Length: 158
Image (cartoon, rainbow, N blue to C red; front, top):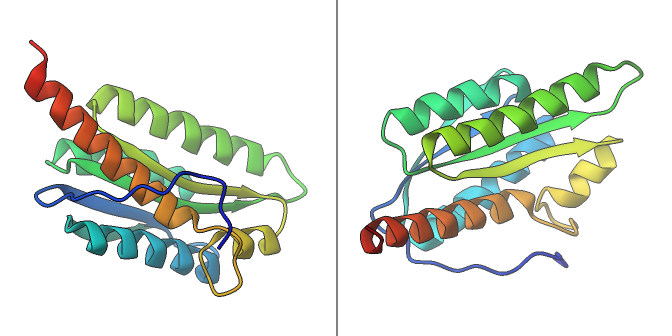
């Protein structure tokens, strides 16, 4: 797969991570989940998966996971543009909410929420056979790498 992001490989043994994924658009979401799981397994992180109705529910669920002891969360969702402003409202709420959760918790939120014009864009980014990118794997890699940086900073500063 030809992605544009960095390749990040880490040993995350001892990190507890929760994947939080929406239920919409199964083929795309299942690809995102599979990519995240591949990265988490390769990094030796402990992880679990929870499913929520949609992308709007990602922030509150991620907050509870972090408040309950997770070192990082990976938020995975699919929002496809339609003919109403619903797309903009849900996209903005998910993005703003997840940013707030990360800042309030001081813990990383891997951002794997795809905002798409059509289903094909999602299939191209879901890490499936023939996909150009693997956004689930990228979100997991970013969350793990950031969790390790934060752990190091907390151990060396102060």
